[in-house]
Length: 312
Image (cartoon, rainbow, N blue to C red; front, side):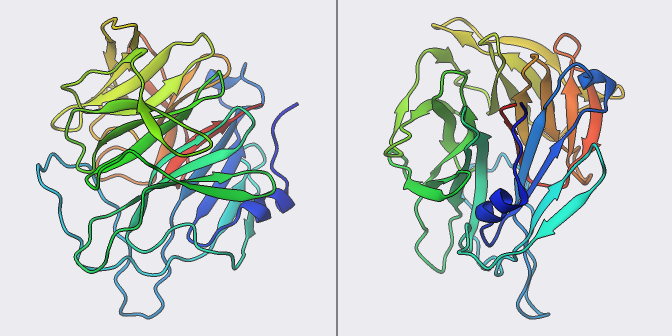
């Protein structure tokens, strides 16, 4: 039986400052043998309180070696929840006046689902010159409630992102500097306390710009490596100090992918899916990946910030 979020359950997950979209995509030939593939997307939306307010600007990855200071607060975030079915084409919009999930000057740095379908959001404060940054934290969105844990073990220049709920029920993620400069560390996250600890069972390249984590049903882990000009390679991670294997450089219609990925996820049949957009292009879209060639096939546009698979 497929995992489905009812209108009432989605209403319980609504928190101001969040756009959450979900769809069950069954029509593409590449995924025809993958029933109950449920993808949930999350992103922030900004609704200024006055016409002179500056809208939220989507940031891009940078190789800057220093942390920029944000001098303008992100405007108040609007409230919208969208449940979208890519099978029927129907869309439901639900509004609520709950407590904001995002404070001003914060970003969504990670998103995943746990084995029981709970959605997990990593929230990272930006460095500002106007006020003290709020703590890095995790918000767990369950079927009937939400809870938040403060992440411990990070310094003020680090962020936790690229969350992954593993096949065996753990929560892991990547920790690195807020400007993305290596090294990147793989960590285990305590689901009760939010404390992080290094995870050495999987080898992460220390000198590469690593982002995104995916685990397939066979237990193999994958990530993406970002080059200086945005070129992105698919990598199978090694275990017990085995060297990671670079599988292929990602490309679409023969053109080199040039903007990193927002997410990398793996379906129940072992199909890797990428989420993102080429540089200077919108919106983001879901792509299937050929692991051998690196060819990406666009499945559907999905105008959110990050995605996760929920169990079927």
